[in-house]
Amino acid sequence: MKLRRLDVNGFRSLAAFDISFDESLTVVVGENDAGKTSLIECLKVVTQGRPVGPDDFTYGVNQLVISVEIDDFVFRKEYRKDGLAVREESFRAYPSRNYVERNLTILSDSSFDASSEAGQSNVKEVAKILGLTVRSNSNIENLKTQVISKLSSGEELIIENASFPKFNNIQLDGRQFENVPAFFKEVFLKEKQASIWREQVSEGTTVETFVKSHLEAYSNEVSRQIQERGIIDKLRMFLRDLTEVKVEPIFYARDLNVDAKVKFLENGNEINIENKGDGTKRRITMALLEFKKEQSRVPNDDQTIYLLDEPDTHLHVRAQLELVETVEGFSAGGNQVILTTHSPFIVNAAKPGQIRMLSLINGATAIKSIHADPVSAARILRALGVENTHLFFSRQIVIVEGETEENFIPAQYLRQTQHTLSSGLVKVINVRGVQNIVGFARAILELHDPSRVFVLCDNDLSNELRELISSLNLPQENQFQVGTREFEDAFSSQVIHRCWSDYHSDCGRAAPTDWTIGAIEQVRLACASDGRKFSKAIRSLNRGGKTMSKPILGTALGARTEENELPQEIRNLFQQLTNA
Image 1 (cartoon, one colour):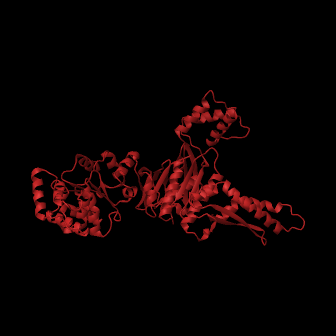
Image 2: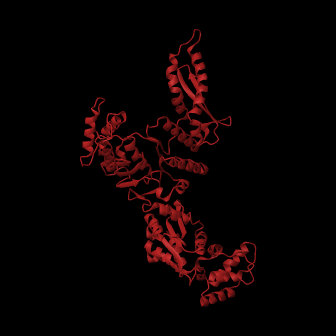
Image 3: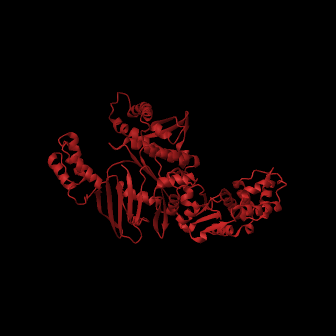
């Protein structure tokens, strides 16, 4: 089973809220209080029967409607609030057209044998789902006729008093820790605790002595079961150096109680779990939840849905990277993972189309995602080196078409603000060579308002960039053109001379003897006359100097040009970037 969509109206900040889920991995991001946890809790209302309280209703709203779509059904719950009282008004299921037609075809086929064990089971299962009365002695042919009649009625099927189907699932929120001793006691000692008092005691042997001897013997059996039942393997997903787990039963004669002491061993050395940090405890919790799921697997369902609310909480950087590998393993195995996170590592590991970004606007949760052709968008953005954190969280995007300006902007931004470009949530994207102009523009506009997207280019911009500017529908004030033909020739000869000379000086070398202001000016005039590229021509003055490439020159100019020396258009751009 897979969750397809959630529609909510009236749950906390989720008003008129609609989100689709990827069949393998959905990563929900956003600022605190944007609605991430509310989304997970909302899913639990329908899938787990989580109770709804008066505080769950959106402020000023007395009716709550939640719909969850799975493969063949939409389940819809409605609640009404009256003061502090909350009443569940209905829980309905709506079979999909595909479900109706598929079962109608199967049951109406002449080869379908309703008298066989499989046929009877099929008829009864569909009948129960449709809300028909099914008894152990029901006439299968009559029941089949009722099912076919209901499926072929032509009316929209509505199943009253529905129940969400059982499914394999693991749930973990940012505050949850598994009680490790209690877990092992429940799994391995609970049954023994209940039965041991019925054991025959021989003459001269006290109950206490007998119990202790039996529990000590059973401890070795527990260690064997831990290994055979896969708990070690599950824990190694999160504790890679773990070699052994021992459970030592502890008997309290005073109240005839049996407890458990759990020992985690790494190469024979005991680890004190209670002294471990929250990050390690959370990883152990995930391992134990994974084991519990395996022990209570739903028959005929080989998939698991993971609902993880900020599983990266308390995890250090390396542990977050390990968590990425674990989550990818879950989804690659045919399971579905829906998680909320603040981890940039998890965000960047996902495909752009798998991310849903939530934000709070006027008290209501809004959602942004890439809907149109997410596969092409992912291919384009990753080819351009645009990570998801940049794509979704950047406050401003600057599009360029050259390596000089691509390297100039970060260096100049650092000079002006004393902060890196990424810390200012500004992303520079060099679009030279981008193939799918329309696809790139569509992906950007699905996540960013055109007023926050800028273009810095020279006057010799390509037709592709002109097309992109048109596709983005950028306002004129967001377009900055500099230079006669190139970005480099927008700077005065004095500035270029000083910046490149200072670059040599910082490297402990003198600038080449040919590198003079007069020589640079002569090259500029010659290029204006014969049409040569200025950036390439000035390299002739750099013989014997440090390598001059467009990226290196761009960084040298950006790091050393004073603000009042900037060309006016570049100064205007930086006013936009630094004053936002």
